[in-house]
Image (tube, rainbow, N blue to C red; front, side):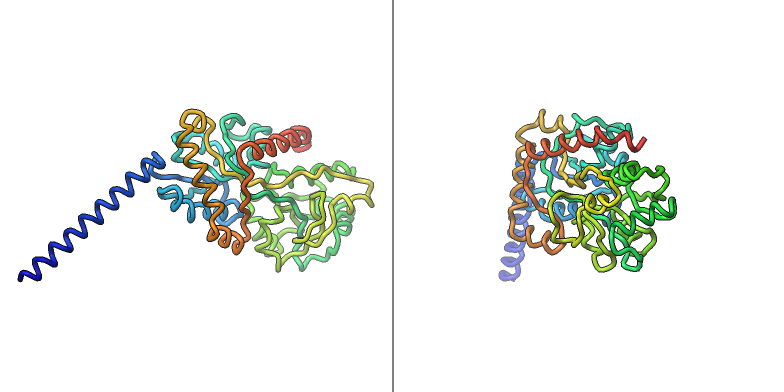
Length: 332
């Protein structure tokens, strides 16, 4: 009986110590990051590249931040609904957002979509910069971008293109038609709300082609054929020429608009009014990017993991904002 009593007392003592440890951990987390949680808003459907990036953060950031991190998808309106929803949330640091600010937030603002203002957002880090690639399903007959362009010229309205309405890829195609002297309806656009359904359509040969984020599309590489890339430098990932090389035979050229810059975003008011809490979040996030296990995870998942930092990210996005401002009228 003495042994049983001692064992019961020992177990009770261990339970009490565990409770104290949990309580202490909770207090430490609260001291480290006051809100006690972090919700990441994704303004597109689950399964796309931005969603995968957000979920990678939610998996690894809690260990650095000391609080649970969850992901909430708020799709609709080419990002406008999610961007508006984010601004309506508390600005105490309990809510952040992962979004392809370039081009979707920029396009939302310039086209008056949603209740969003540029100076309400603070861009912590552009983690994953992408570029556009012209892809067709392998069952399509087109072997070169020139063949596809000639088909569009000869058969106006027959070629279908998967787009997210108002993004840089959509804008590039509209400008291309203008440069080719074709009517705006020479391409039949099929609009989707996110990269995942666009890639599903491409992989299933449901559309003729798409101009789509290149790095985020490696998941369907076995099902598609690259015809051109929209970037200045040669590309090792997708073996295809620059789009303007293909357009040269038609005496046309388009601007090389940058594709998705998938960015961690917080409220500007959070950064200004709670600088210490903001620094806690940024430091934890940067430590997460530097972790070997996170680097291995995103390499396996083909997810970007760059640290640009707030200043370089803001500078890059401002340049994209100016480029879109010069060309956005083509979408009207």
